[in-house]
Image (cartoon, rainbow, N blue to C red; front, side, top):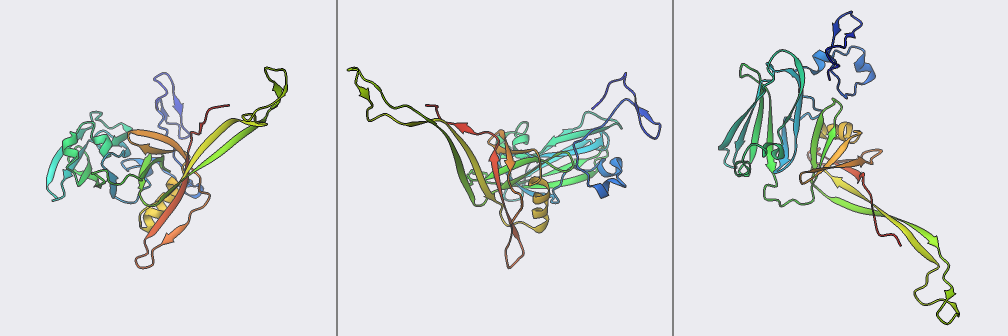
Length: 294
């Protein structure tokens, strides 16, 4: 953020500036000793994900974020391929904020983001697409491949999480295997006097009378979900980034629902033959709901 032209910031090395760059990032104590913000962040994609090839749904959100100058991060080329590996479409996004001033850029490269300016008819043909981040000389800085899954909408029980990662940007991942939903029901019961005078001034009660009634019923859902078989690098990425993140959203269609990850520990399930791993997490939407009051 910028403090304004009338504000001067004095640094320890006596250099003055009226601009402060801030990012909600986590730095481990030992790493902070020799920490250099420019070397660690500038012109690097701010992600915890070690993979440059990822699966994505046909209408999922995904962002790539980077501290860079407009000349260094000048454009992005998105090339879509069909199942025969033939090019379906090629589109370019140009950074109009050119120059040598360092800024934080966030580029939406998920299928849901790209449908905003690439026609649905083209995106629906994609089996995969490649995103290339380029400088103003046309050289590719980073390249990411996205394999498009569930284009026909067959996989209904998938849970896509979007969360604040350790570097201050947002990562995303989809859990697409076994899931279990539980609903916790909390009732508040209140005592009630059942006797009364009827129309004949006789003291008594009828069959519908109740000595207690429920004044409030609060319901909270929780979900236990599992990944597909993943590598150890992906497992470590999810356990150190998603599971510990303070800000997590669940994507439901085009909406983001705030949720809390409940895991106090993780269970590492390894497949014997190839060493692949499955991760199970439990989460709760941060909104409960109620039945009618009595």
